[in-house]
Length: 403
Ligand SMILES: [Zn+2]
Ligand SMILES: [Zn+2]
Image (cartoon, rainbow, N blue to C red):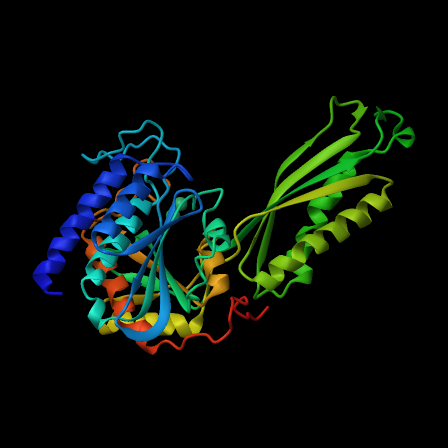
């Protein structure tokens, strides 16, 4: 594609982004956005399928044999009243694209439309995943359950997420963990009520709860390899009625963040062992509930190296991100089924020292970076299916990890 034709695609990408930005939609309500995606892909001659309610998958087959590469863009907005001051601000009260998913969708559309004109130069198969509900309750898992990683089996999956912390147009990534897993728990301690002056006739749940709060911190400090960190935070303690009444029930609620799937899997049983021991020691009983959220995104080192090389060959700047983020991202599920690469794309507005972060009502991005995003998807699409070895297994065994 000529540079002049590409420039026209970039202009179209900015128009799509603004259109989506003006009409943000929450998770699984992305009807308008997915209609735009479908119409645009159809017009470009790309076959599409509807999955996971409002999700869209586009499939583009290259003229030469090669492996199958998937790109993912999320489409949903946040329940937030926009205060960015942009002329194309949200027209929907209390809904805003404050995480840049409007830009993700527009960039992937631009890449798909331009690549569709270059079919004869492409190897393998490209899949374009337009995903609902990343901000919750999660659209990646229902897309995978609908079969998007199969037929043909996806050999590698990549995504971009905008970042106001990187200079505009600069990419960042790393090997291994890119984001944390996020799981929540609730512990309910049951005792026996009574008078505060006669504790021997009661079973007081407050000292038991206090002991649990302290003891579970020793999972991180004494049970887990310090280089594979875990954070366990108790955010809520609820119990008691009055200063001279023994609390017959106390509830503890908290969150668990991990960067390593092996550590993550081990936490519920460790937590329960401590809760059980302390409750038994003090004649209390308990129940415990876990709510498992998104896993940690794992960037496959080999696939990420190939992706970075492809970007650099296309004159893009890629920097190494030293630390993973403790935020969560449901791209993690795709990256459990095929080697994955999560790339950040810098969108910092020049001259702003302290830019509003994602999820802020003032969030804005430098639209000039969108062209870099399209170029990145295009570079991966041209380089990887011809060179990245297809997997031979018939279906997705999780990518092995060190834990
Ligand atoms: Zn977000
Ligand atoms: Zn996001």
